[in-house]
Length: 452
Image (cartoon, rainbow, N blue to C red; front, side, top):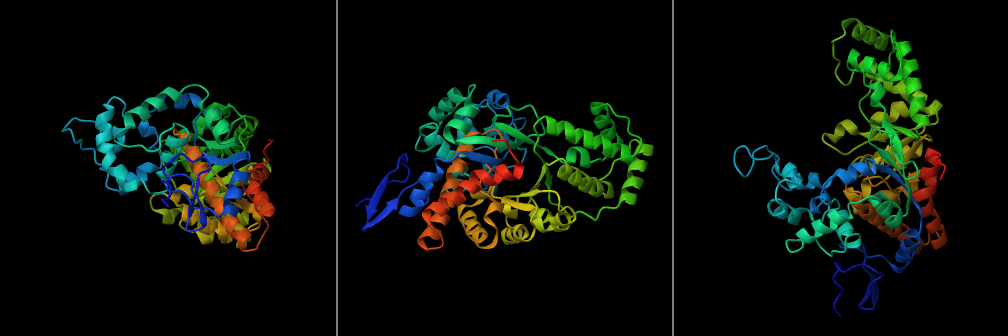
């Protein structure tokens, strides 16, 4: 008997191979056991709290000239570059042409066929990776195409452009994903709070690299700042204003912070004030002091501090272990540890185990690697109280349709791990479904104290 092509549209299709039932999920998807498939069906009925996005207001997406390359934007660029896509500013069309390949394939003034000709060779190299899979899922289950290829890229573009109209967020996030609310980060608060709830960057107030920065904040809030204490009072007012605007948390990154010194911070702040034009490097004693002052304020204002860890660039600088002294010094503040610290996954899990004020957020993880995510989740069940685990954050900006693709992968991963646990006798299927519900909804709701 011929096994079904995995690229067919998934509507509960199954097949029989040598007497065993095989469940076929999305393109290149997981083969789940009957128990795993049952758990997946239950998860698909849940409302979801999406615990990490970078989505701007819908109006920003509508201004974007969406086409087939919208599906392959955001994280996919990392794999394209790794696969050899040129990043130089030299144009293949000669001097004076547009910029590097990434800029060009997203430049709608360049004919679509020319952009596809540049892009297609690299798509072949990345199409089996986890970063690319959400694009293919979205192409199929939102736009109706089993593949994206040389034959249909123009039609895919036309369909995407036609659907880029008012209501796209609700059609995808609510209608397709069943997302109740998504927590998003764009350094702005002008959102429809019924769907998107903002976090704001801690560095808005903590990163003071010039006196001009202080003056700009003071002007916005109507303050006159003459000392570090003045500045801290102003920051508290700024955080309170954000809270009134619906902000539920602050975002920071893990770094090699030095232990805060008030005297060093005061001296540096006073020097900035007296010199006016002097600029400070990003990492400095004033920054380290302000970060921890703002973290304390966040705890007092019942705001979560979300921490980017692991991935990007020289990821050694983003090791989640850098945060351990800060977690220890701020036991009254709740921290949401993003991305499981990939590649420092076990270290991040042990942090979640040892610190009552740290939650573990699997945002981004499923599209970094589904296998890694499954292994990590399986180990978290062994190591971490289950109320500390958050299953999903799409982590996208313009390509809102890829949130759905990522969610499909996250559901599969959770169903795979829990199904195996049920089959091994560690829990019942009903218990597994309740765990999944907690990870996708109850835990992020509780952590961020959302009124949903």
